[in-house]
Image (cartoon, rainbow, N blue to C red; front, side, top):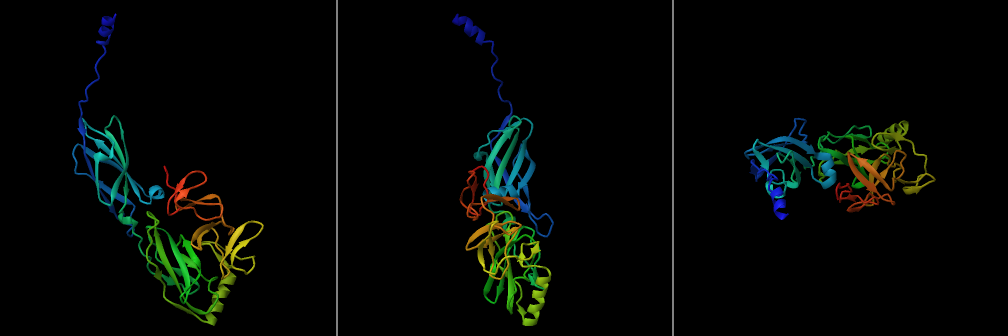
Amino acid sequence: MLAALFAGLSVIPALAAEERTKIEKVSLTFTAYDNGDEGEYGEVDVTTDGKNYSVEDVEFLSSDSAAGSGYPRVKVTLYADDDFYFSTSNKSLFTLTGEGATYVSASLKNNKQRAVVTVQLKKYSGAQADVAEDVDWDYEGGGTWSEVPNAAYYEVRLKRGNTVIGETMKIEDNSVDFSSMITQTGRYTFQVRTVNRYVTSNKSKWVSSERWEIDEELLQSIRTTAGNSNNNYYNGNTSTSNPFGSVSGWQYDTVGRWYKNYDGTWPASRWQQIDGFWYYFNAGGYMTANSWIITDGLYYYVGPDGKMMVNCRTPDNYYVNANGVWVPGL
């Protein structure tokens, strides 16, 4: 009986031997390049000096990957020549150079003829926070500066002499109306710094406008302009009048919690840093709590006290990093 069994097994065909040649080493070089839009980065060249395979596709994952790791990522698809295949998807297969490229993950497809590798660019050239230029007054109560293409947003603050007025504002446009914040005579300046869109912990140095001397006559003109526009708070785009009282600091009413700056303004539809913590205020000017906030494609979470959560897991078990940004997959 055993003889019959072995006889039967003998007719099972052996597995076909792999006739293709292994590719056991892949070398890739990454180079960020200016895409021609006034120095705006956002693309990379990927080249190889290896044989028997080629770069088929390069996908730059700037926003999503920055949200996940603090560094931009690139997904590279490689294609093996006929009669060749990739031996493994392990890190050991890849030699990566340029832009601080480091291995994240890889997979093999199409019977190992295609390899897809994702890398982080830890020294990505476009991650430098370029300084804003042409920071200047419009001499009607507002300030402007040149657009910085790789900026996620701008942080802006107003000063009278050496005193910062109100809180640091998070502005997505390249202009701001200060007219409602200029309430006294004196020498005023405003300062702008950029926050890099790929690595939001990278911020430029502060750049100051020229000093603007506000005398009593000019002050009255600015206050008239502010009054005519009902601009008692600034939200980056929209103005409205303040129906509340004159006490500054945190305020409470039947709708919720809001914050009034000492000069009578209050934030709406934007982030504001208060006592070292970031809070988000909705279109009505009220603090948001227990909610995800999407800014520039990045996901942030504010807890029950309204503070942006950092370096922890949210109540729904998602991890946010030191910048408060959700890290997918952790």
